[in-house]
Length: 187
Image (cartoon, rainbow, N blue to C red; front, side, top):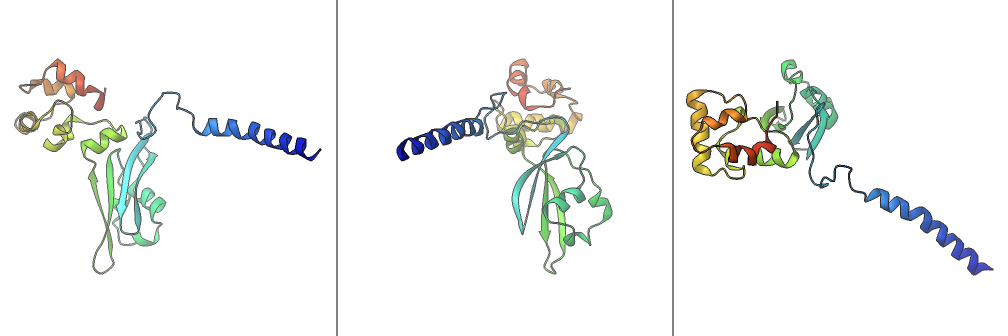
């Protein structure tokens, strides 16, 4: 009698366990690889780094401020000396907040942009008017010489306005645009 009871309990456990394992290892409805984020409106993707802070990527509400993010990551005790203008600055996808400790233990914050490689991996759209030469070189089909021509053209003639504006650069045609289009902001 004892053996059938153990067998019944084992079967019951398996019946409960298998659906949980399948649910936890499911594929997303969009069939996206788990290692990549995908940008969605309403959310910004930022990175926060610094001493005492684990270098992490956060998804925050679009338009969240530096103060909000710092409260979320390090608390409010360390920010007494920061100017209110800095704390109220709105963040954008691709921003990096770096907490820097000075010798007198005073903390300061630097804000910079992620490079194109990191933004592409995170699914954050690129803006052709905010890219430097290294960012252009990170794109498929754009080598160092073409990246140099693109940045030089923007310095001479001003912003491109959109990815289509990059066509004014010698060596950029419909073929190149179609290859790199998926990495850029679409309007």
